[in-house]
Length: 86
Image (cartoon, rainbow, N blue to C red; front, side):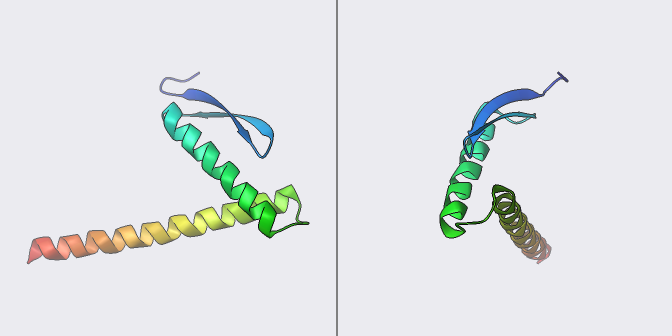
């Protein structure tokens, strides 16, 4: 395995996954638990949808949240630069 990569075994939606990445075990555990929790919530809200469609909805929600946070971060950086230039 490449240097700096770690393996983490997780159970998400009743399935076992091996996650490989540079983040800490605690980070990967938190990510896996969050995904599992969000899938449980989606299952309750979208009964009758396939697991694949639920996963797509989770991905859409996640990317939407990411884009919102990136926009907020960019706005905060801009405000900080403005304050520093005053």
